[in-house]
Amino acid sequence: MYLKEVIKNIPVVGPVARSIYRTWINPPKPFQGSENYWKNRYEGGGDSGDGSYNQLAEFKAEILNTFVFENGVTSVIEYGCGDGNQLGLALYPKYIGFDVSPKATSMCSRRFIDDETKNFKLMEEYSGETAEVTLSLDVIYHLVEDSIFADYMNRLFDSSERFVVIYSSNSDENPDDTAAPHVRHRNFTKWITDNTTEWKLLKYIPNKYPFNGNTKKGSFADFYIYSKV
Image: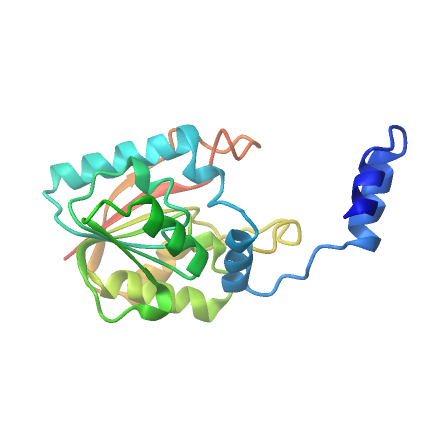
């Protein structure tokens, strides 16, 4: 830690020295899978990402709260609840949030400790719960492994009684997957068509803030709302 601080404070060679430090002295840890990535991220003090904050979070909350109200939804399950910041804007009568990270579910439990309508569990603790709506917000393009993606999608649809709401990118194009090993864009609508028979796309809602190169200001994710036939 001392060496890092010394290098950072060298006025002229600082940027070059910091690059050398990150590359040779303290290189980033190799990607160890999507589940471990998020566990380590939250344990290291990280959050759910730019999509769960500021104007992007407000846009998502506006769409979701309106949908829940207009359709008389009484119960919601979210797979990938994260740090709970997005949930802080939600108006759900009854909610269960699942996540792979013990740190994330712990943070959510503390944040909403006085809210009896909310409950949080680890994904490994799933025991057949169902809800009128299941949610997947900014999760699918972080499921790098094919088997994890398939298991996630099956549970997302199997546990829904009425609607599935997905907020994600929808393309197989990954031009530079080495820059962000925890990101893998997928054409998930094709998976739904190929693997389900009782679901139809009810509504597509493009992002109010499309991606413009700045993840704090825009997102490549859109809303896809499915209803049970």
